Picture 1 (cartoon, rainbow, N blue to C red):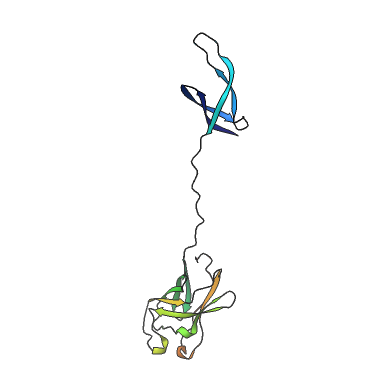
Picture 2: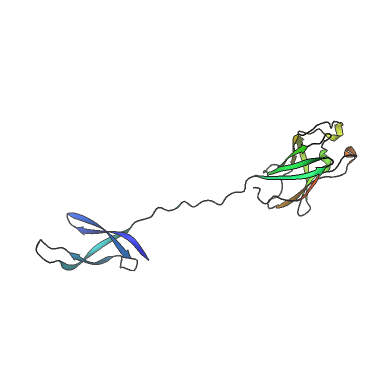
Length: 191
């Protein structure tokens, strides 16, 4: 293996720099060189102290491993009657897990927080904390069409890779279809 070295020869009044191709196994403290004599004279072989300085190549910046993005874009559609409910993305945050959804061609939709959960792979339930964009089923309002809405749940524990986002049967939602996205891979999400 070869490297470029700058040799600096110490001689009282002057210092000469010479770029040489040196083999790593050469001694680092001193060496032999051919000293030029006066014009017309042949060179003589002598020994002197030589200082070797390695030319440093600029180091490549080490990139930090990519942190997963806090939100996973999913686009998973769930057929509900004649329309769809699309699970657009899940965002894992330290204070909450936010689920972004939208409806397509559905006339009557509402949400009922006590019957809506995220369930992780170990069966732990994360209840809904808040919602926006859809009326609450308990209020009796449900006439919305093609709407984007958000569900907010308790934060997921670290290391959760797959979840189920589900609505379960409740008195306030009788007569409605229940939505469920099962075994959703969120391993690309951060946090």
